[in-house]
Length: 214
Image 1 (cartoon, rainbow, N blue to C red):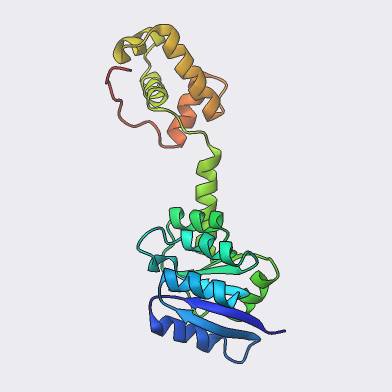
Image 2 (image 1 turned 60 degrees about the vertical axis):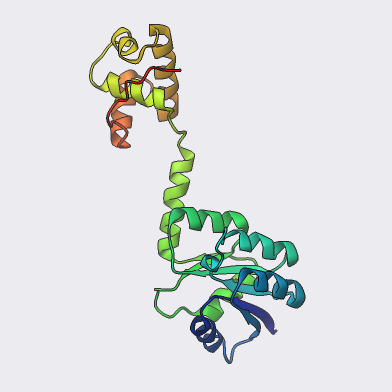
């Protein structure tokens, strides 16, 4: 079964390389373009089964190109082929609907194998991309402490009482208790000491800002 592929990359050499990797496979490169506008137009016109693209070619939000193409061809399998592995780009690509994320500095991939998998609805990521996703998911799973909650925990770690913390932060003792309770819940701790220990494990016990609370 022949499947059509659209290549989207600003560098001709990259497009030629991908085209060469897919030679003599069941994948037929029906188009290759260099800009985001060309990619959207080509996707609409060609309705490819698979789109291999580098999101960095767009001067605006490159990852949004994935969503824009999927608006034109909802069933297309998007394969991101990028030189970047930062968490923000990786997570954004996954959220935008990409089914695979490959890195350009990796050894020559078995691209046909990857495309076969994504063409039937599976997902594939480079191991470094998987690590970035896990790190991002781990952070997202942990509720973030507010600035005041962080200040309270940091002062508690110094051994200050609620009254002393309140005096330092211009807060009432009752408000300090509430901030501490919220921080304990977010840190998954059942006591003040456990909250301080968990905050330390997460590297949150930095300097304290003594600006007056609004």
